[in-house]
View (cartoon, rainbow, N blue to C red):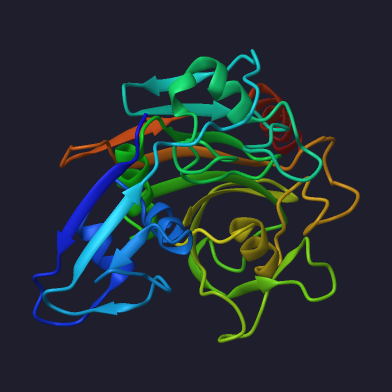
Length: 311
């Protein structure tokens, strides 16, 4: 495939930030993809390579882009079974099991969701990034449930934009130790990198990290635990786990932010992405998807119910 050459003349009366202007003009590409083109010197403004994504352009500026075809993911497809909740030409909605990493990273060079997706849909190679083809958002390794994979650049941009503007509605089920201070509520607590352990995140004072907001409601109380439905409004790393710890009721089985010795016999943490509501490519009405609790979690709830009834 040959490079695509795009020529644009800025017609806005006010100065425009280059990357944001290109997103409006080329909606089939994600902002991160366009920023990469700028960084690689493939965006020319008035005959000179753009020097940064935030460069301002004025009315009449001539912008030329040289857009290479999607790069091969350079990942080997692996025949790993996937539970696909929904699929069309633009995306897959997968019910990810706990224990599966979403994309390759340090220490995880095979067996990821991306490796499995490449075997199922080879055309996602290079969509959205070389090492993370198709990935629109992420779930922690030990979090199960719904995750989206885009199958082309247009879908990747369309879906990513909804996550960026917080239009996506997400609902998680979390079993926690104890109970939150109120049966329902809203947590507004910024999240930043832990300065002592860079692999961990932590709740930090306002202005020291990125704003993070979660809402929750209690679905059921047990003698020593609570089942919550949590709606993350923002999408920070480990957000739900950190916010529930902040409330004093960490997720059961979370050995990083909760009790090192879980209160219940679980090999994973009890956090499941149960529902997701998002607009599919080109549609004006949102679609909703659901993933039932996996068996290892329903067994825990059944046992808690029996204990509660006995007491």
